[in-house]
Image (cartoon, rainbow, N blue to C red; front, side, top):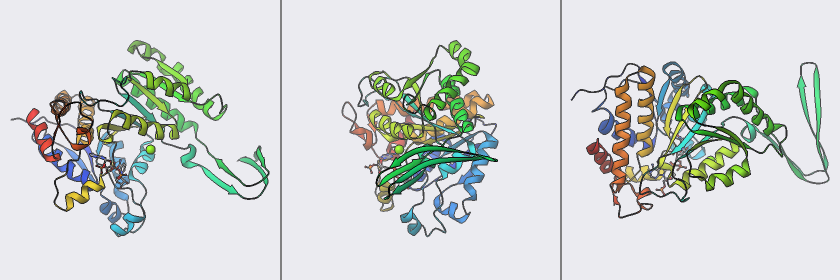
Length: 396
Ligand code: NAP
Ligand code: MG
């Protein structure tokens, strides 16, 4: 059989634990037999990040900048426990955060809908895609607790001048928080959302709380509105899609009653909370894709879940696990399809479509891993990861 040829390599970013095990199985069973795979390989396992003083993470983000498309395996974010487990030189920061800050991206998360796996919200027939602004607000905030009465104010220094803004007077103990964002980051977030909605031909919602936050949240709303009028309104009309701003409480109520099928842009904290709600309401974290899109149209595809540590420890003991590889398969197909589109090598796109179809057909035929078997509307054939991948390979 002739394998599909590639023009430009993908940036292949390997990771840790159970997802690293799945990574090799997916490549061996589902990719290499069909594609003459060209990749620029970066090993982002925690031990290699430590050995390279984390330079490997920066290099891989630069490679995505250069080549345009990356596919990433889940990676461990170092914490105190991992410092001891891996004898690390230091507590390296999250590779996702490092890559995101270099690419200046927005993260889009989309559930994979399969017949037979019922969302917990019965009305949801189409995916709801969450677009989360991943910069600033509470995540870059400064906090302060005081046990004394006093007065709080914000001071802003700019060149020779300074501005003093009164906040409040406290009669007793209390807590304070100060947050910020930048126009540059909000513009790039809004641009990424409009472009993503156009590429998926889905209507876009943006929601915040501008009635209460009359300057901060209102500023987000204004930037979205201005960009929409100046750059996107015509293309949206041509694609038959719409842009709507909604108050966040209104949006939450409408989302629950909707049938899905839209992109929902959210500020950092709202996106953090609502993406977890949407993911579990659709069924499983392992049935959720995630793509980081930069304003200059560079793409990094990954699974939305982590390295599935509990399963990995069982794997190390020689147990065969039933870890769901679907989100990682879809990270590969997303990257392969995007590479095909950019290089106009449409055989790659056709292969990606075919592999996704084979994966969904396998589940719809009743064969699946344990996490979704419990949600299946019927009598599932629950299998190990290796058996599942073999069934998908048979269906290609
Ligand atoms: P996790 O790896 O997503 O796993 C949490 C639990 O969800 C698992 O124990 C498992 O439940 C279930 N699960 C997740 N993915 C699954 C799959 N593919 N198939 C079946 N079940 C699945 O999250 P975590 O345990 O909080 O984090 C583990 C490590 O991943 C941490 O070191 C964290 O830093 C890292 N992490 C990385 C990323 C990333 O690279 N994007 C994202 C999140 C976390 P049961 O055990 O009940 O079966
Ligand atoms: Mg969260």
